[in-house]
Length: 135
Image 1 (tube, rainbow, N blue to C red):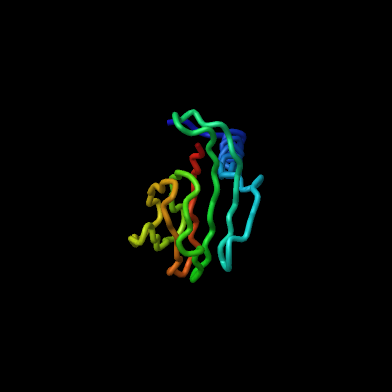
Image 2 (image 1 turned 120 degrees about the vertical axis):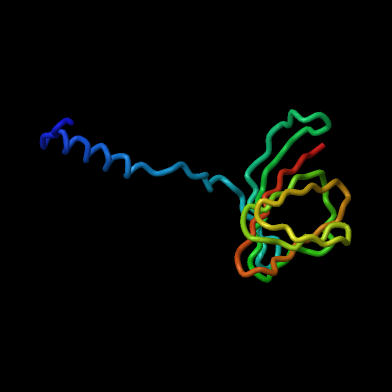
């Protein structure tokens, strides 16, 4: 068994303290354009880039933030294909007249020309991340 002198204990203590001060990586929430989409609904657009997916010229990313009790305009017509993902909360999704409950981490798709709107019936903010696939 080894014995530790004061200097060794001090070094170990400083090393432990420096590890405790390191913060975990978090996603950046800067560099977006925010637009009100209705009462209690905000869209945050993050930008657009060329797509490598056959049939699509560009891809863009946006979040739709829906406050409790808020909803998007009914029967929105989708202007392009998209992949939607609930990152926070829960939304009731009405797509072409069919209703589903989309809980956190639920993923679904929409096609150009479909109708859809969402309702936040919960008591927490819901965030729907949308990846737009533009032809």
